[in-house]
Length: 199
Image 1: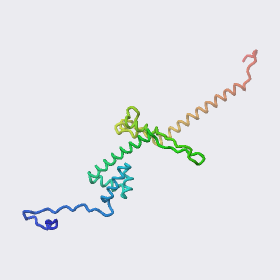
Image 2 (image 1 turned 120 degrees about the vertical axis):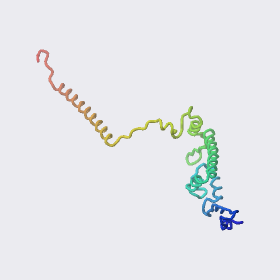
Image 3 (image 1 turned 45 degrees about the horizontal axis):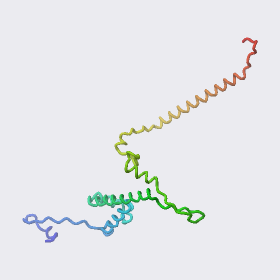
Image 4 (image 1 turned 180 degrees about the horizontal axis):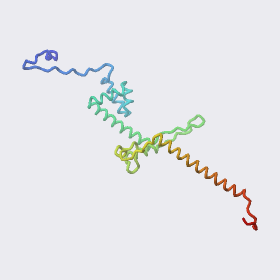
């Protein structure tokens, strides 16, 4: 008995069959299985959702909607990202330890090629592997950020008051320096009394 015949059957019959749910219709220009295979292949290679979506010819919003709607698809995306991170870690270790060729050009010709390891990549890898020993990388964890007191942002009036107070201090210091200079000049201009003169 087909789904259409089951739908036509009345509810008062003893062996009533509920209508089968309609299967998800695949759009010819949508996220087809072929595009999904292309997307996962690119994602396992590059580890970037936007780049993999671009390779597959879909938008990143399509990927986001599929992840939210189908847990199995989300699980596959997380697995592909994990696979990509392993490959990227291996590439980073290779660049940090073995180095990459650096071409030195002199007078328009290749003078020599030297292999230069990357100290900065090695430092990042060591910090990520053992942050207690080598320091932390990236953003501060949420718990630590919550403990850190937030700085108060001054209002415009508070900033204006602080600037005026600083200017007043500078004016006071300049005035005192001028008074001291005037006093020194007055002492130089006044004649000194002769040894026998009494004031």
